[in-house]
Length: 207
Image 1 (cartoon, one colour):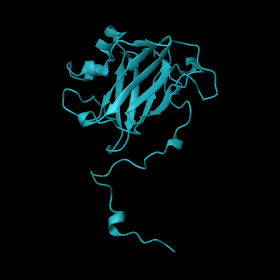
Image 2 (image 1 turned 180 degrees about the horizontal axis):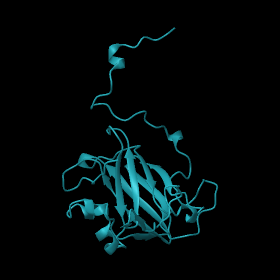
Image 3 (image 1 turned 30 degrees about the vertical axis):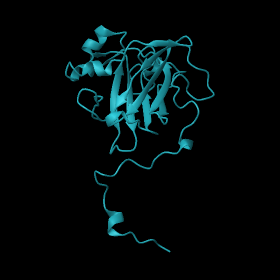
Image 4 (image 1 turned 45 degrees about the vertical axis):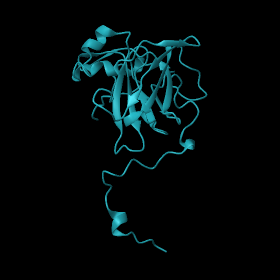
């Protein structure tokens, strides 16, 4: 029997609709949030400093975003991407994936294991070390993207062509505070506020 769709079912989504489908726990695999390995059973890279990136994703009022999906991508410790668009991709670390996926728990917390990225030149402009993040989840009509920078490189941050697109008063929101140490690793924290007052919302970039 063929199902007949009603006019309502055929209507395009409106602003009140949110991203879907919502991903079950089985969508994620062990090690998805570990950028230091090309697969869960592969040996980790031996190049660069291994670090942890942690934070919370919240919306207005500090309410945690549960089961939000975050994707991270970055160059390796030498500033190379394993992608043909990088002129130096042949020099990229073969044991570093450079991409990972995490999801938030009931408190909105997420974590990535990765390496300190290197800086690189893009279109004759020097990029400071950074990690790109995308967030998807309930309440978002489309994914949002931002870029996080490290406090270790103030001079490079001051001239980064992406960070300096923002007004000066917004730039500190994308520079993480100094790291803490846990089990011998530096742990950087970056909290993401999807919606809130102008003085607390995370700056996002267009595709």
